[in-house]
Length: 155
Image (cartoon, rainbow, N blue to C red; front, top):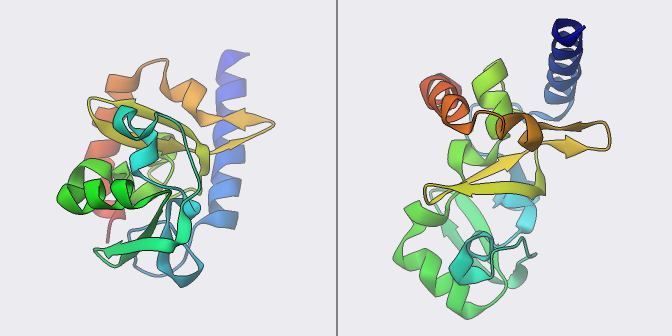
């Protein structure tokens, strides 16, 4: 039964990925006008930024590596500019679970996240499927798989 459930979950996730994954060769999960993290402030996820997702302001934005990030305040933008590598989400902002398990770029719910070893991971979530829960069962293995698959998907 458990194997059947896993296959069903993966099938659903692949269908969702096909529906939401952006075309083209851009490695980043972007919404209109090249905005990353669905407009959420990347610094806000970290303890120094409050530790919870917050929408950024269109008036407080900075572009890094072709992605426009929005921030809740000028202090967050300054922190990001000082160390963008720290605050940019893993795997271009695509669902970390889907990268590792499926080798597929799948959209995210920006409010489903985890900070692990100083890195921001974001996940797909809807009422029937929360990939963060599956990720947290063995996160180090998930990271290892996703890190191995990401270079091929980042093209």
